Image (cartoon, rainbow, N blue to C red; front, side, top):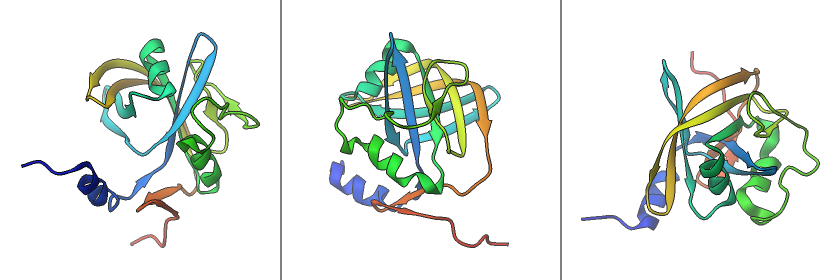
Length: 163
């Protein structure tokens, strides 16, 4: 017996995650999108995975370039998360007026985040409506600060540490 997409969404809304922007470029075209389906799967070798909907420009660029960058957002970047979640539309320049930089690849990373990784795709798995990208981290940088958290369709901040 299988569950419906809505049932799975209801369950997954209870999974609290960080918020990241995945970005890529190909032949001078840049695009990015908000994700929470990003995780590290190995530290040696340094591997991460991300899942992107096949009908997005970002997915198309990652498939063509075989590389992407990830910005892990800080607590102060809620508006950036919303911007890259598609509120502006798929064809708008989501990077307009943002301070960006690059590490090793030309993928744009967003200043003010907590951490950044540059990735080279080593495998992709078509999942029907989306693609799972397995990628090697080829460059990384991290800062200290508070992360932007996402839970049940809303943003949160960390509370007190349990010690």
